[in-house]
Structure formats: structure tokens, C-alpha cells
Length: 309
Length: 167
Image: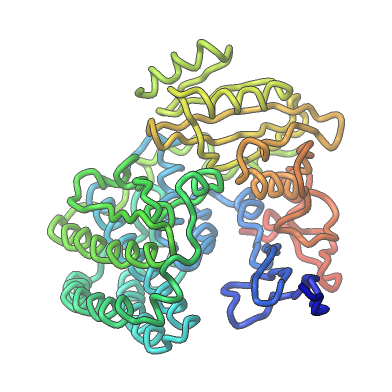
């Protein structure tokens, strides 16, 4: 065949760190062959704030305020994971009421986080209405968080030994109202997106990852479950009493973007089930262990403040 | 296998196995690390095929000064294990074999440890800083690296360290 003089070289494009479609501050160095991405070198670190170094200088209880900022879309998970680790080291457990409230705010947080994913993904695929709906319902959750903790993000609500404060009056009613509202809204998202040819063209068969690659690359969460690997810490290594709640772990086999979308939608429904069970279990009682019942070692300060080279 | 059974099974192959708080930890020598990880990954009754984290701690004045920890997970057998490696203060930087040939995800995890502790992973395909700026001097999570109190690299501003701010 005649040589048409096509140039077969790749083009290097720098995307970000300030680019409307890079969430957070992320830079990507892309090698493009026409419209195909041949290689991608992500440059992260723009949001690194030295949380680990800072906490060396703080007390264990102060650490909560730092770790809640590790991922601003899932503050309650960061706080709970950190507090559970400190509590395991101390050999204590939070009171039952605190455990129930922790599960409740975490599951609401999961819905809020999935909504941001759904909204921004919709935005990027051209479904701007999905962005508006998703953030509208997320706002409702953030209002609940503000009512309960005083803050919309970065709450520092979960503390070593329990919580910083009890639920305020009216919080339970507010959550119940949300539980009534949300199932219909999730149904609407599904009606809007699942059958849409544009949505399907841009998600079905896109970004497939095999279960073996998921393990090798260290991928977890809904992505892993969308490839058919049944691994959910709430079932496998239950904490905060998750083993006593009735819920299912949604699984899909395809491992593509559409499967991940379906898994996340179903997870939101399961989270609503868990929140409902939490509300039914809320009984009056202490929400934090008294300071004297927390067996801090010789001093409550961190290792650094007692150590001098 | 529950945790004590796992510890017993691992004791057949590894001399130092510790079970505490329901967690199993193996300590190996630096030159045995790759062999140990390969064994844990490929033995059918262990099959720790998921590397969830590589971390490091710094204990200045002690030997070994650095302790690397590899956190492994087996999704088939629903169990976890931690592999610890001690590295001496000298030579600086400390060196250890990379786990990237065994676990691709070790690529970024080892870059993080290199960035923060200056541990050099031999055989790593792309050992660059990952979080700190490329021109940063030092490795900030070493205990002798100051948090602040030095002329920071932002317009020469002076920030007192938190332990001198009366907190």
C-alpha cells in the first residue's frame, strides 16, 4: 500500500494540575496517539498536607481533627478507622449508642460520597441534570451532618472512646424524612441514566478491569465488587457491630464503568436499609466513655512530645 | 484458618512469628524479603495476593533504625499478615529489594516510603518522589526532620514548631 505520509509519532500533553476535569488537584502527563491515550503518568501530591508528620506533635485525641481531612468526601470513615485503631491499642470499646451513631453517620456519608461520584461523572459525560440532582440530595445529607456535628465537612465528630456529642433533638426525625425521600430519588437516577443510550455508550464495556488485575493493582471497594470479587470489610472483618445489621453486598461481573455504576446505586439502597435499622436501635445511654475510663498510658501526648534525640 | 492456626502454619517456614491483638506479624531479614513475599503469595494455602500497604517507621538511635511493614491480604482465605523488615542506620540511604516484580501495586507504595523515609528499593522501575515536590531536600517522616521552625521553603516565612506554640 502506498505510503500516505502519515506521521506515527505520539504527542505529549500536559493535563492539569488546574484543569476543570481533574477533580482535586491532579496533573496527568499524557502520551496521545490521535485520540487514544498511549500512556498516562499521574502526578499527585498537590493536596498532600503532612497529616502524619503533624500528628506526631499532637495528642491522640487531637489526631481525629487531622485524619478527617484525609478524604473530604468520607470524613466519618477516616475518623472511625483512626479511632478504632487507637481503641484497639488501648483495649477499649465505644459504648453501644456511640457504635450505632457511628454506623449511621458512616452510611449517610457513603450515600453522600456516592452521590458526588454520580453527579460529577454525569457532569463529565454531559448529563448536567444528573449533577444538579446528585448535589441536591447530597446537600440534604450535609444539612443532617451540620445539625449533628456543627460542620458540613471535616467534622471531628467520632472520638477515641465514642463521639464528641450526642445527637441533637430533631436529628432522628430529620434522618427519617431523608429515608422517606431518598429511595424515590435513587429510582429517578436509575430511570434517567440506565436506559440512556448516551450513558450506556460511554460506560458499558469502558474501563474494564479483570478480578486478577484488581488484586494485583490493589483496587478495593465498589470497583472490586463490580468485577465480581466479593470483598466488603463490613462482612469480612466486621467493626462497630456491622455483623448484626441486615444488608446485602451488591456484586456485578462485568468490571466496567456501567457495572460500577450499578454497584454504587445498589450500595446507596443498602445504606438506607442500614440507616433505618440504626434509627430503630437508638436507645438512650452514654455516647462516650468518661475520660477516666480511657486507659491512656503514662501520658496522653504523642510519642514525639516525650522523645528528644 | 483462624489467627492462631495461621501463626502456627507460618511458624513452619518463618522463625519469627508474632501473634498479638488478633494480628499476625512475621519478621524477616532484608535479604530474605523477596523470597518471603513470594512464598506468602504463591503457597496455595496462604495465597496472600493482595498487597494493601507498605509502611515504614523510624527509630533514630536504634539498630535497626527503620522498620518496613508489608501488609498482605488473602481474599480467598479471608486473612491478613504483616511482614516486617528491619534496616540498619548505615549505610544511608538504606537499601532493600523492591516488591514491584511480585506486586505491581508496590510501585506507588514504595515511592511513598522512598519519598518520606529515603529507603531505596533496588529494582524499582521508577523510584521518584510521589507526594513531596521533586526539589525537596530531605525525607520528612524521618524523626530528625523538623516539622517547622526552620525557614520553610515558602517565601522564607518562619513558622515556630507546634511544640513551641503553647498548644
